[in-house]
Amino acid sequence: MLSIEQRLKEIKVVPVIAINDENKAASLAKVLVENGLPCAEVTFRTPAAAESIRLMREAYPDMLIGAGTILNNQQVDEAIAAGVDFIVSPGLNPTTVQYCQEKNIAIIPGVNNPSLVEQAMAMGLKTLKFFPAEPSGGIPMLKALSAVYPVSFMPTGGVSPANVADYLALESVVACGGTWMVPNNLINNADWKGLAALVKAVNN
Ligand code: 3PG
Image (tube, rainbow, N blue to C red):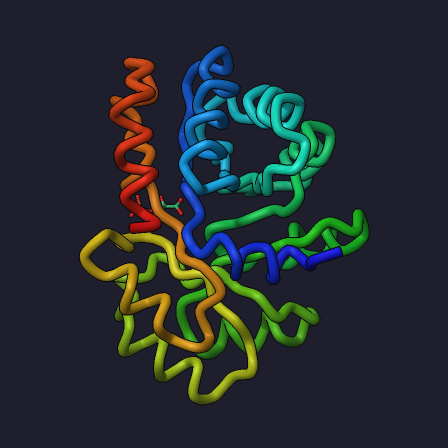
């Protein structure tokens, strides 16, 4: 079985989703799966997140699904119960990391400087979110961190069609995350054709 890191490497771009209506979750997952991005990081920034994950999982058992913006242990529990494959947090919260390790669920916490990378390494983590990527120095910062530390990164935050290829060209980058191919207005309006075009463009 492929590890989460291997699966992220194959997918390359992770759609970061804030969904307001769980009734749109299965249709959104369909658009992602059928247009070459069988993956989602569903952020816990909306109350619909956990139920949306459950419905996506039910519709697409093999889809790679993460829970994003996880800030506490209760959200970890909700995400696991909904059926996620991995947890993502914006920062490095030792309590959340330890809890995920106890629960045996992969966690990709956010870091954006050497001290945080070292703390994450001390917790036994090897794949980290570089967040917020662009405001934190973008590719030059990531290159500097990658030259020193034997870890992999998932840059997110300001990644766009204009820079995604440059991030993915770095050996230390397993995948990039972003919201540009899943904008809220298209999800809210159930504009599945519009979304399909943006999702398809990611792989072209
Ligand atoms: C995240 O939660 O990872 C970010 O909000 C994604 O950032 P972006 O909107 O700049 O892609």
